[in-house]
Length: 278
Image (cartoon, rainbow, N blue to C red; front, side, top):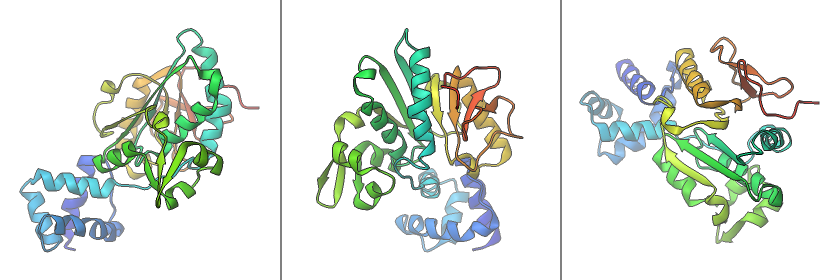
């Protein structure tokens, strides 16, 4: 790939999605964008780059889609979900006893495993949460992933990754080599396409935000803008979850770690509605 073509495509992807591609990721561009070139009847990345220079918006949209499609799995890393069940839910139930409503945002939800994992945990609480309202909003930049998530249909390989067998049997039905998620669980999540580079105010206020394994792909400035935007939309006693390799340190002064809970953050000056660790 020509250097100027790599620079153009990497710049385009960053502008549209925030994803930063270093020179050693040229192979990733070639692997993911050759199918896009073929789809548009182009011979290779040279012709694809020419179309980008001509501002072919349909093509640029497909490029962004191809570069930002990432895999996910049920109950990924597990610890955040244990914390959600044992510390965050009980804390919020106490703090929200009057209104009995909790809003959750799963940012960059990919094919839906994260928000559906949360939905199953909430459903497992049964009668304790019978008169509570949980609004779960799940967003992703990829329309392909949003459509897959809405369908709630997963392969044998996908349900084997992180999903306890008890929940698989309880909330999924097998249809050939596919597993279909129960409609009651699917109805608990509202999926919508959304770009984290856009203003977040339109999403409303949340009590819990999961934005895991996303910021690692952004540069420092973009990370700061996204985190500050989340802080504006997070309730004062709410919590933010980041991935294990992510941090707020040196990026923003709007958040601080929640003591005793790895990967969980609170707003500076706020007191999170969480059962204290230990």
